[in-house]
Image (cartoon, rainbow, N blue to C red):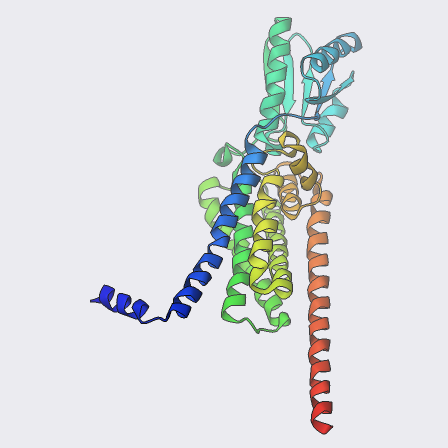
Length: 350
């Protein structure tokens, strides 16, 4: 009966109405097509073949030996590593702990490779592979020292990236829902709703994820800062959504998805470190919003805050610029509405 009624309803449409209906459906299909094309293009191009490029590496030991090893590595893997040498171990280890380099190879009767898995498991594995080759060629055993190890609950190092993903989707969906259920809501109230949800969503995301991954081995203060960074990031994504909706209306979804999903996740360095991405994605990593969040969270959780400033600068810049642009657009629209009202009054008076 329901199918018959549905068929009767459609058959009752005039040819013009049927054509309009199909035109609307075809236009709506642009979005899933856009999603599939952009997702395939961005994610496959970024992740299909991670290759190290200028990965920071320090070889420590007697100058004659370190120079020889450096030359051999440069010849065997040109462009893969930015190699320097040192006769002192303390300085390179400090650079490793502050994320200035990705690995330190200490030559000796036992070759010790110092890595920081918290900065990216792929980076650590690449450095270990190089060190293993040197140890095998030299006929000495190899030991691994990890100055920023991953926690037992996050053995792949991807849990922080998933936290980033959840915060992204939360910030985006929040303002998408607001624009649908209350399209005429004042900007000040939209910002208020975003502020509330920007606090709630990262807190809930962390609470649930901690059931599975624990506390990442971080201190209580580190976890608090991590959640605060998540809040700032979620609000930043929401600001992008508000601004795009102000300027583009329903078409804003294409811009927001591009900024927050298609360009954001590959360039963040969360799934694959930036130095293993193609040049375009590594370039975006220097200033894109997700990169700022990922750098900040990693710095707090695994590196005792070393390098935190750079990530926060990116995040803060996105949030500040987004807020200023939203207020300017809102002010301009208000002025235009007032001018229209004045024109209407003058027209009636005339």
